Length: 185
Image 1 (tube, one colour):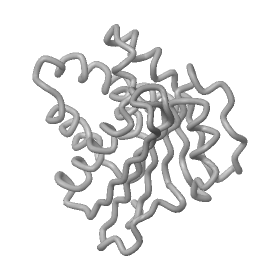
Image 2 (cartoon, rainbow, N blue to C red):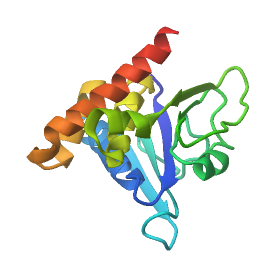
Image 3 (cartoon, rainbow, N blue to C red):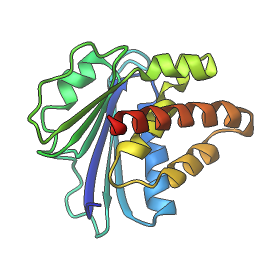
């Protein structure tokens, strides 16, 4: 585990990038009691425009409040993949929604690229595309070197009303299982 870990979640408005940042902040900051800094950025469009959330997770106080070389990047759109991966850390992890991102960048051998059809899995598990962000959170909890899966799952449960619990548990588990399958390869 790194003492200072930077994450970026990029996609388009309506995919839940801001919500994902909130959930990871709760899991790392409140549950793990780490120092966190969360920033969000989106275009003038509420849905369909480019957006991202970024989080720094640290054991120590955060002196510089900008994600400069993310250790983990999630790209849920082709534009996000092209825009938000250029400064990925030398040994960073890129996770793409392979059903949407058709061309992942070529990265050096130290960087890891994982392609999971997040939206497709969300539809299969829950019948709803909107659950792709929760599928992604399950995958991120497994693939990330600095998050505890149980804390991320608890943060998802706490963020949504009770009526979504069963659906979100299915989505989260589906993402976690897909990530575990990739790690076994």
